[in-house]
Image (cartoon, rainbow, N blue to C red):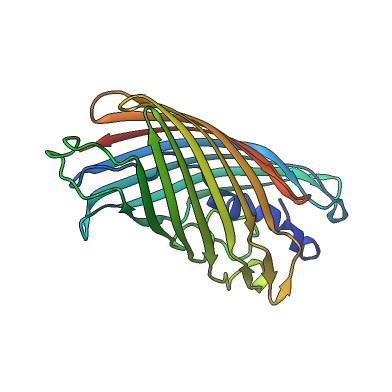
Length: 302
């Protein structure tokens, strides 16, 4: 899609499809206690499609996106000051196409490559003592768990200076999280709040600098566990903020999204499992996007 400088400010919406919108997530069972000394590796495929809403003054109509994503992740569990902790790494890949009418003429943009990897450290502050696998399950599990985590997204993904739409972001994102879970019988309620802090992208479109205010997000999950490894979750999340500034000039294009999801976890064996989910993201502001995402993920413990 050919982008002209006069319509750049509100086209932050397009950029947000692979930057701010993807930063929001729905992750049920985020604070599950695990034995120490375990390793997990996972692979996933996700397909997102939807409509993009842009101010008609910019002469862009019928904008849409189709995005195929893949990811590889690794998780290591360990004890930290006597508490259950984990470290995980996720490396995303993406292949996307954006389509629309620019000044009445069909236009399209295609991007593919590696996205920005995420590194995350999490620890259970309450209700999650560090327990080795041989001792795990011998004591009654904690009904209430409080967890804290910090993730860092590194600017290592594909980025082209003279393109507005990119897979990578060319900036760091730091995201502290605080979550609480409470289990009663087979039911678990989980709530997680987080804040996304963005460094500046000093190689933004046409030599400009992009800044974003923090994005504030909260997500909740209601989970029913049929048996170990077999569970279903209803989830919802809301994000607000990330208002951009381009080269010192504030732009009226903040993010305000509702996300809702249905997830299903299925065990394959004692050490393998898959996850299926559908997520609907709906913008609450005129300039935004309505996206539908389908996910299939596989994980193995070793």
